[in-house]
Image (cartoon, rainbow, N blue to C red; front, side, top):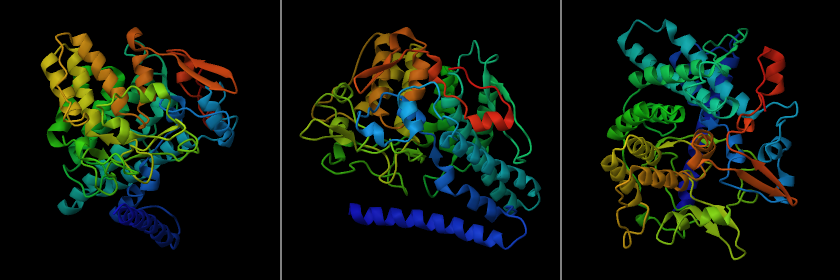
Length: 454
């Protein structure tokens, strides 16, 4: 059954690639390769190999995985530099994290610029509005992903004074976008998502296509990153009212190679939007491993332990619990949004709501023969529990780097990261400038924008 499923998935991916190739071949017959029709715009946004890919350096920088002195030799130089938190990550080379995200923004802007003329027929306008919503969503999520690596962690006290990122809202490549403030960058993300949410449908055919619940989920994630817990809770609640399904892990088989149903094309009820990490060499079970102390966060009653991880006879632990069977899933899912709503409720001392949400999650993750609802009269203890469950539930989705950046501002949740390679110990203290990646040198030379301080 798994083999048949994987063949179907491969066929879907091949179809999407061939459609894109056919589109490019059609356009090559014309003088300029410029999309002009609604069909063109849809092909452009449906190119999931570009549009549904996310930066992965945060996944290498964080503490979900470690690599060994032997395996690190097989990585690219910028992966090694990222893993060891070196000052210069790229050594003059381009960064796929930067170029891929800005390519997504460019594609989105091509569509948004081209859609301006579709204002007459009602049927055409409805299609155009949907495509506009998709393009706005893609532009927003790409810019958000960039902020998690190439901009400082958001702090409401400093966001209006520290540098943000180049915000590109035109497809004209001759326009050089300066670095505005961090607040301006996040303001653009929020504005795009809010408009997208009004234009997108409530249902879609495939999880790779943006729709209303995904835009609401992305708003919740963005506001949580900003520390705006009121709005994060609001949009998490709005999202969960439309899409709130959870997988009962009691019904999964931990012995399967991939126990969790895949998000592609539509097998995973929790997934709201499918995105995968850029395929770096680090994202490989032969090069990235799980530390024993991370594995031990999950007790014997926690079904995630056997569903997420493989542990061989030599004690080597690897991750198998992704929400996609064909790549490294790092998209949006209802479990994350439920945890956002729970955290926000706990922070405003609403114990009933916080406990309701965390127990809704846990009853689908703990052995049903053993499960008893978590209870406390202390909102701080509830918050500690939710933060702990967030660490366990969202493992491997490249969310950990963002969580470290925001939670390091709170002393009780701050951690110092450590690596050991060739008996040399490397450390990354909380709030270190190296939590912000350098902007690639080629971008600095081309645009003249200021470099980040590391």
